Every structure is written in structure tokens, then in C-alpha cells.
Length: 143
Image 1 (tube, rainbow, N blue to C red):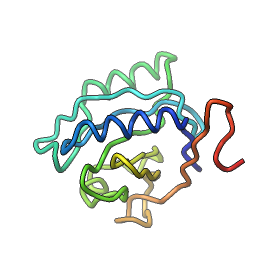
Image 2: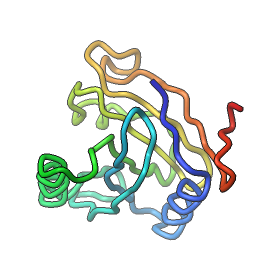
Image 3: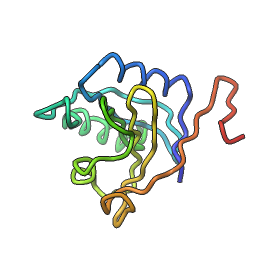
């Protein structure tokens, strides 16, 4: 598995992370087969949004309902670590379901992709996966 995202979408997310300064941004990624087709920003409802993120449950329910009704499939989630690495935190691992969904972590400059799995290599919850970007001409970084 890999996460494929357009370079423009990734750059936009990085800009949002920089603008948010010390607050973690978060949202839902839509697509299929590891390829992001759309993203939806959500409100971070964590008690301390400077150190943690929690996607607004209503937004998540709406996304799941939309998928069941033939809408875009929920591929995974994104969030930022404003003053940290793009490696999942122990808090990320504790809140992640081992459902195979993909996680994109950004910090305003760097990005990494992870898959939430049972018995993952990171905190028993995440496996690192390749992150591939493609440009306007449709070519990916791997080509």
C-alpha cells in the first residue's frame, strides 16, 4: 500500500498547517486504492488542539454516511504536528483503530504516510508506507 496525493493538494495542506501555527489541523482523506481524490478539513475538537487532534465526530459520521450512500470513500485522515516530527505519536496510536485506513501527518514542511494496522511497527498500531506525489501532468515522483 502507498498513499498517492497531488503535489498541489499536499502543498495546500502544508500551507494550512503553517498558518494554523501552534494548532493541529485535521481532516478526512477520500479516495480509493491509496490514491487521494479529495480532502475535507474538519474542526479539531480535542481538549488541547495545540498538542492533539480529534476530528469532529459529526464530520466523520457525515463522511461515513456519504460513503454508504454512494459518495466518496473514506481513505483515511490527515493531521499536523506543528512543532514535531511527522512520525505518529503515542497518542495517535492510542486513538487509531486498526482498520487499515491511511494517515497523512504533516508539519508545515515535511510529510509522511502511515497505515493503521493491528500489530504495527510503530507503537503496535502504524506501519510506514510510501508517500507519492503527482504533479499537474499526472506523473508521480516514482515515475
